Length: 210
Image (cartoon, one colour):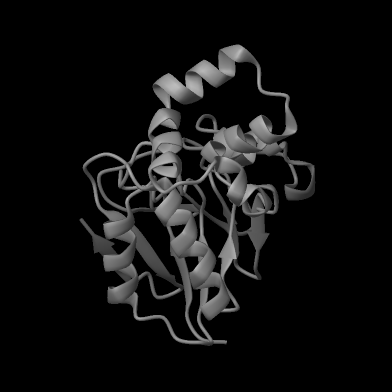
């Protein structure tokens, strides 16, 4: 096994992703874990998903986790997204930009249905738990609700609980990587005006791309 590296929320920013990967210079035996939110907010969601899919073929140890933005799309495919949630996704969470990126590329969202539907919600190693948003304190990992793994903020963010393993997550934007004794947050706002961040574990080496 080579390096263990987590990458935060990308949100349709292809140039940031390409630049970050160039800096990381991944090797065949590295394990790269994407923490979800490949789509929405940025203008190149289709291109980001295409890039990540090709990356997984090149680097076989890569893991792609589901974010809450992918969960909107999964609900859409399953036919259980209410009109209210659909409007929130489209108007408030960048869904219109996502659909536009697919349309400009000459495709419908359905072309990546298998990718979205197959994304797991967490990954566990001996020392770390990787998920998009976090965990609910006091609940064993195998009993966590999917909604918490994908969307939780409080009481997770302010918890001083030792979770047994360090939670590596994104979802909540911070100005710089937040490295605490019980969790590490690497969502530095790439979908807006911040950099895309990656972290190597356990060395805590940071890469960023504006």
